[in-house]
Length: 476
Image 1 (cartoon, rainbow, N blue to C red):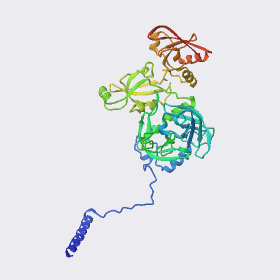
Image 2: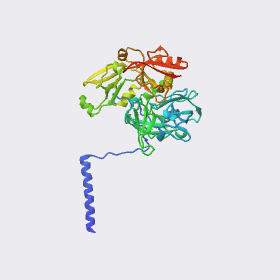
Image 3: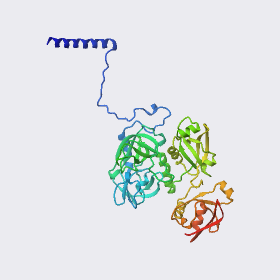
Image 4: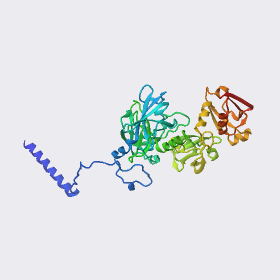
């Protein structure tokens, strides 16, 4: 027993000695007070004036409650009765018997709503249910598969709507909310951060697809497609479009179309019923180690031009294969998706500035974008319908082609199988010089001549590599 008392006494003495030494040499310890009645309200404690210089933040130190309250009245439920199902059924479609649904975002007080193309694709009827449970039949204004965006309208006024933020200013790590209206449940709100920008996940189809998604970890599930991705100010930074998943459920990777691209596409759909897309006229690839070594580049940065299309905006601006594009209108483009997104914001006829590295020297040029037919003329929706009905794609002749062939006309660059023109046995590369004995020198003249024809259409022209004139006829 004495042995145990001795050990206990020794321990007490050592503890007292330790306290005396600590207070003598290190001072009195400070008290730590936890105030349980001080809730954490803010997503960011910096004021706007305290943000690091050079960064233009789209978010502000506000709470999620305020932002959610601003956004939810502007997000709607969309039900579409469809003729055929989309190839994208596996994620964002719900319903049976040709009925699909998704979300949409009101962008004006007079009833314009933006959603995804795949939500309303092939729809014969579109019904919109508002946050207050009112329902309306919607009119399809226009749709663009290459960006997966669509614009619809309901006949009602004085609606709540969302303003669009500058998505270029969205920062990785910034808080965002994903707001949808799945299953007509009024609304769902989830929070996350921006994980990455300029993501290409290869979900869209077509030669001119534009994928430069904002990636977040905000939970998005079937039915939320077409809903809003907003910052903490309640401004629209993107349209939620897809997730990457192995299970068919949300796994932490969701993707939204950036607001700056949305702004341009919906403006085109509203004004023209179709997208007016400007093209550089280049074949491009991301800069990798092999390209960087070959060109003696200091960093794996930018987009390498491998080919220049004849008669294109890039050729006229004297861009060359081997150039590395680094900026569009002073905005950095680190990858192909980023470049495609920037260019897709402009129409044919718009002038842009392109900065390149050539032989490791900086060079900047101004060029005027063209359409895919190498023209600066904006395309009319009626013209597209005429050419689609015939099954051909046309392109203006370049100056070199006109000089070499000594003709004026329009080149047929592709022919759809089974179309009226395909049944004439015409080959791509045919240059149309006359229609029903009337000379045609541009695409507009071709459209007018075809519309003017009453019954029979006779196409006259030449091939670049074959002598003589050729004739192809079909019934209108």
